[in-house]
Image 1 (cartoon, rainbow, N blue to C red):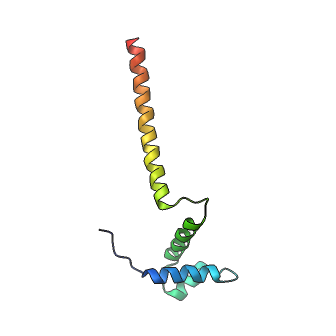
Image 2: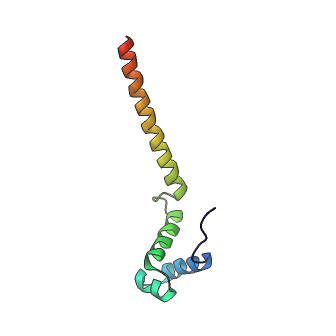
Image 3: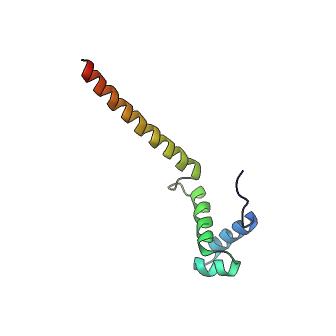
Length: 91
């Protein structure tokens, strides 16, 4: 069971919207103080929202899949090396 969220989802969405619509871009630390949240939490919310919209950043699901595939690839490489050594030994 996931841990309950400390800040409501509406606050997160409103904070990200405020940051995006402000011109010039506000300093994240000041905006976070105005909203009463930690500046690193606000920075994370903005990054998370940007990751879903930007094509060059990986989403959480894509990052997890990439990690899984890298582990599987390493395992297959090790297996391949073992099989090469065995075939050389029995040849």
